[in-house]
Image 1 (cartoon, helix red, strand yellow):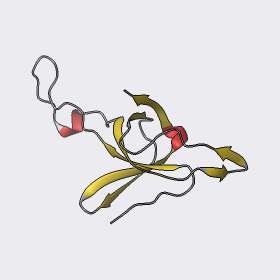
Image 2 (cartoon, rainbow, N blue to C red):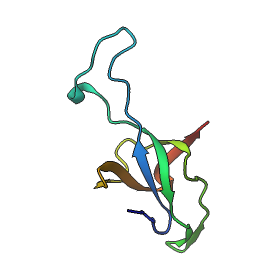
Image 3 (spheres, rainbow, N blue to C red):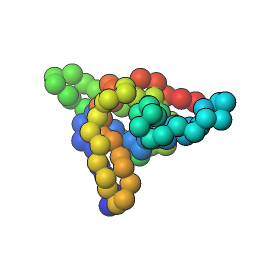
Length: 94
């Protein structure tokens, strides 16, 4: 299935955090923080959003940092993805 986000929306796949600490302690799922790093899967066209022109600054394949609780999570074709606004992306990681 192909996802085509609308307006200033971006579809991302979260990148899981380490399951062990640097000292080798294994963390349970409930003790792990929600991941904030993600890979961009699809990008909307941008355009006029709320009366303002939005230019999309991210592209498919970019690794990004997102706000911790931003977006809405979906399960599509067995993969968990999050759809969020471009403004919820804090930085592109290079």
